[in-house]
Image (cartoon, rainbow, N blue to C red):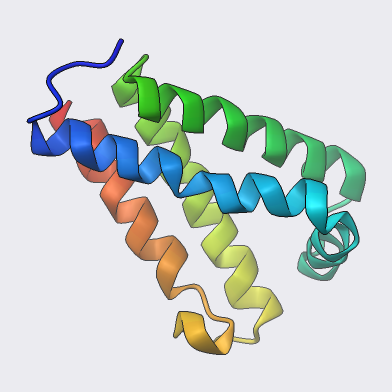
Length: 120
């Protein structure tokens, strides 16, 4: 469970987990936009990938925040985020900067999760 809260790695894990919350919320508040994104990225069947993604986000978020299976959860989150970043790269036609719809944020977030996975 939650370890030493003064540990920078545990703090980073919690931040990485909390950052999933807006993504999870978007799937419930704006499902049409989420389904359209997955469709644009080429995922088929769309609903299977959306539900798998939301489930994965919920599980890794809870694990990262609570410190449960931390190396596994962080590694899974990193792989998930690199896939998301590649999907954003494809849909945005190669944009890097997040404020232009690019994948920069996903890659930074994935690197943070890799740090947690290797240091926890």
